Length: 321
Image 1: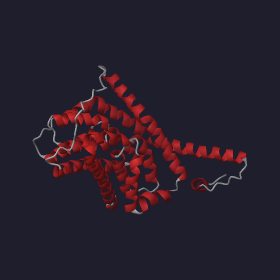
Image 2: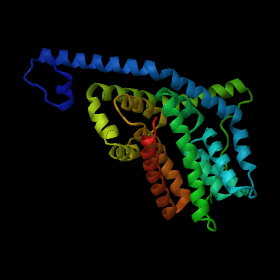
Image 3: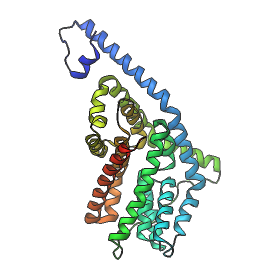
Image 4: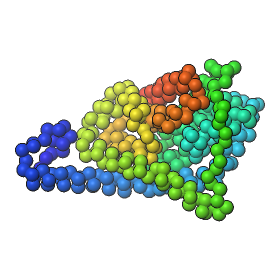
């Protein structure tokens, strides 16, 4: 039988008989199935709870959350408004394509650009469903994710206020507030329909994420993960920030991968950097943002996300957590 190191490094003895090769493949598939089942058992109920909570918020609280934001007019403290807007962004259940038309309606109602920036930034990074799902990473990582996303929203609003105070940062021309899909008169049916949309949107990515985490655990030695994301702290944070750009497709799909990496030696700072750059540079989010930011502001957005993720990761690695 081949050793794990043989499969991980590609040093395979191809002089095995056909029967031995078949047996080896069967054994490897059993190992992968085992790791898959372990990961699924550890994370499945976090995913289910996240979907349920996300649907509850979307059906019963979404309008209240958005009305709080809509009632923030042009007067009042800018900084206090950024704190409130960032918190509301975290609580908002909408994806970026749903957030931008809502933000456009906020802007037409007189909400300041810095408040919109805080709301949109934190909304990109986090939502109620992902908060509960991230509980699978442990309490410490969950708190790090909530705090860094909340602070990222505040910092985004602060930079817009300081450097673009007399200029318009967003161009919402052509964006109208979307029609809600949660319109069934029966609240329970409305909730079930929302939950079904959640399942369809995240189910495949969730299973792919669990499979990838099983493959990582089977074939990637822990010292490789430690070297890439943990041992050299500055290098690890930089690597996590970089990998988060192409790898992040869906929050539900990356939680199992992050869980596997953390268990194999990924530092908390590297995990934080990945959790910032991933959703902030997800391809669907970038397409929506480019439409309202323009080339120059879009480039500034990229630079801000990468820099904030790097600094956050390095600071977290220095803390005695």
